[in-house]
Image 1 (spheres, helix red, strand yellow):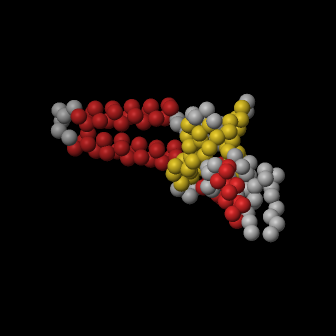
Image 2 (cartoon, one colour):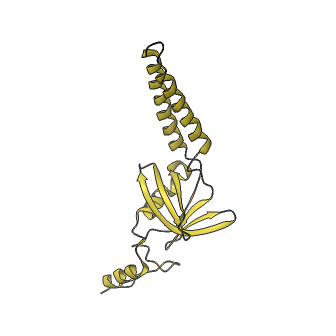
Image 3 (cartoon, helix red, strand yellow):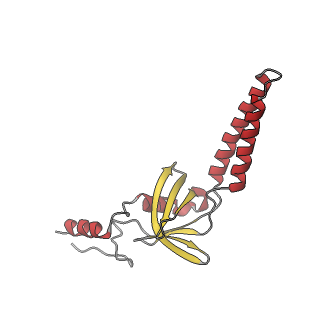
Length: 166
């Protein structure tokens, strides 16, 4: 049985196709965090109203919640630039001046967004939140590539492919 191999030398029926996905501001994540922060502030405001007149604890709680929200907004995690690229055999984080090869692991998938960890060759871990809204036409291809069992060693993949051949 003959199979056609892609340019990367992988079987497109076994491995997901190549895809590139832009890293942009994670609006869904920021909106969810803002909503949760608003709920926390509302609970603290109610606590402030319901507490005794000279109780200092609601004020401390409100200050801590407000400070944590401001700090989270200033840090703005998960807002990297560039693109994640799957070429059919390896993952790359492509930025304007550099291209880093690494492994991608899905840590949370909520259908319209994914939290992924990209671990470069140097061992440094980078976290990205990917939204479907960034490129809806490539979203399913990205999810297929991210969830594929591509982290196996090359020897195990080759052994698996040879075992599948008659």
